[in-house]
Amino acid sequence: MSVNIAVVGATGNVGREMLSILSEKNYDAKNIFPVASERSEGSKVEYGSTEITVEAIEKFDISKVQIALFSAGSEVSKEWAPKFTAKDCVVIDNSSQFRMDNDVPLIVPEVNPEDISDFKKRNIIANPNCSTIQLVVALKPLHDISKIKRVIVSTYQSVSGAGKAAMDELFDQTKNMFSDQIKDNINFTKSIAFNAIPHIGKFMDDGYTKEEAKMRQETNKILDKDIQFSATCVRVPVFIGHAEAVNIEFENKVSVDEARKA
Image (cartoon, rainbow, N blue to C red):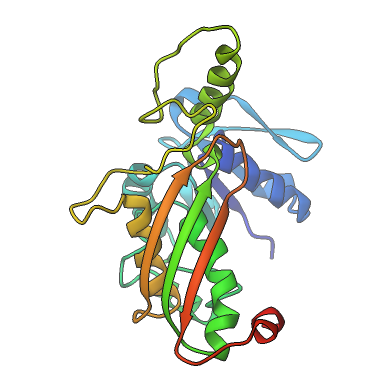
């Protein structure tokens, strides 16, 4: 039986990437339903070599899909994910809305696939923060050979993590720098062009930013609640691609060769 899939947030950067990957996996276009807000209703999005029409989430017939991939932000997920699950649709959510919900599994397939069965509690699977994903994929095989006690990580995150408007701001500021034109900072606290900003998300009471707190909480939930964790997250003037520098303290000695083989 074929599976019908809705992509909620289909007109955004991540939504378009989801559609591209589904096309690469040879899912038939007739089984894919791009969904967005009413202002995008009737517009077209690319799907492989063809185009498919975007439907408004307010009018979408949820009963015709079995899986919904959400990437439209936490507020959309908060309002609409329960409406999809009420129609027996499994929601895979890319936002932070359900990540720390005890009844929702937080899944990285290469790390904790055994936890996916817990989706039945709410019919929702949460997807971690992008920086958490690449970190725990590296940590898991090391944690398997010797328990990790502490992680100190510095991330260098591209503007794509803040969305299309942030990418446009980097482009405009970089271009205008050479013509002595100054533009207001809209998506960042400082100019992002030719700069590095150690500030992603709001500052919390403990002095860490929300992004740094998310990395700690998500790593503890996915990998091990006892890992001590400290992160410094920096936004850098790169369009796409995150990097991380990671210091790990193990319970037992691990050689360089053992770490590489893991």
